[in-house]
Image (tube, rainbow over all chains, first blue to last red; front, top):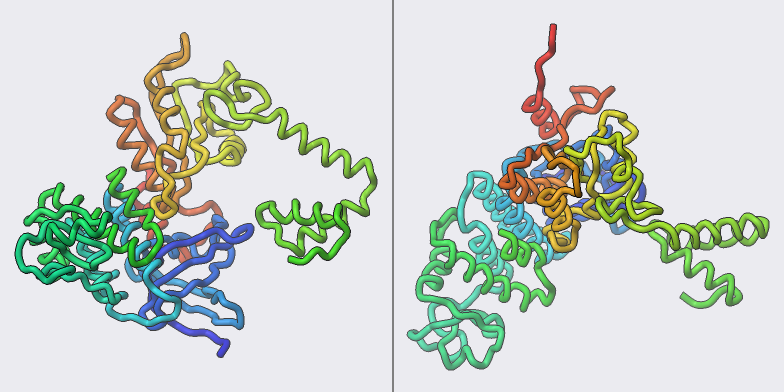
Length: 241
Length: 207
């Protein structure tokens, strides 16, 4: 039914449209992922101003017409997450987080767990939390139907000698099963423990930098394998972070 | 799409439709305008396209568009070579020139870093900028300040922070264009981020 609706959402990305407009992709509380046009937003004196930049949490008034795209008629900032944008590492981490949400979710599929997890991840990043990206990856994949097997070998159910993470098998693997998946990556006992800890606890778990990088690479492989598309921000984060 | 017109007309429509912002309908409109225009008008357009393609290239130093090896700003002896203003694209230079506030040189990155689009520093003219800072042209003084004039959005901010991390250790002052209220704007309608940055970047008024 055409008409206006109110919602609350987090801006995932924006792309230019025509002379002065943008298509804004948001993850909303009530309507899931929504793509909507913000008319005139690129003009200096646009009433939207900086309200619809990525990472911003906003209250929205949206007009749903007959076409595929809605139109944003008003937006007010709830949280700007400006501190995520003012630091290079936080910004690239935030980009990786919103890209995963954008790629893993279907339009208009409501998911309150995804919304609150995204909000939690941005809040943790804003406070300078560490390991937010790998924690978010494993948590979101887990609730999106890709819960990884972390306690026994995903190939043969062995309980010991777990040395790798296999995207194709969907979890940790022993040395024998690892050889069957050429995309499998080595995982140290510390890395495995960290993965279990990230999945079970809130954001902001500490670890050494190498374990974080290894784990982020393993989870990137896992996410890309199942989504069947590249996660550019994650590659960017690993390459320039 | 099926061939709806005779060969040459359809070819023209197809070529026009490849341009940014021009869909099949607009392409058709432009094509028929051209067919109805005089032969001289059409030839002038064709000539302008060929001339621009042949003669316009990138300035060897700053990567602005130019019809010579160096662009007009790099050639000028009146500009201050100790300040470089870094912009994303050539039209940004025109915007800054219109202010008549800036007398230094430019450097065009030819884009901005974009984590989401996967555009990294190697896709931009970053290495060339660093080279300009490290080894000034013969006889010209060292660069003292780099003004980062990328767009105040997420990609522009990422680019600015990345450049600051690279350039500051070289002992060159890195500055960023101020963010704040547009002239003629209304405080009541300003968003928190813009107004917040305007307060943060406020400056002293001499009484």
